[in-house]
Length: 59
Image (cartoon, rainbow, N blue to C red; front, top):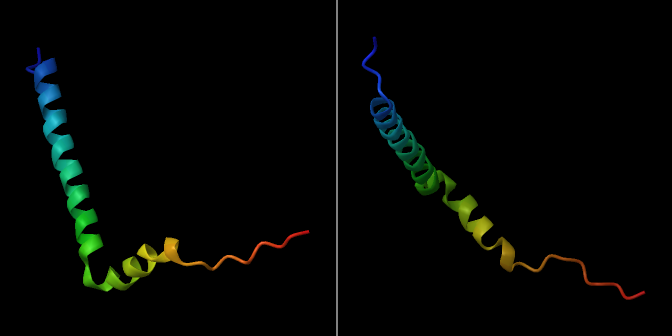
């Protein structure tokens, strides 16, 4: 009745998934390397090294 077999559907899903995730990855890399976002990423990268916590108060 139909030429859709499991192998055909599986191959289509694998190729579609590869293209989809490759596109998402490329968008993520482009966003990370976009010059406008550089300052924000540099600030966020040094955030764990900053000591902005209030000193502990001994009661």
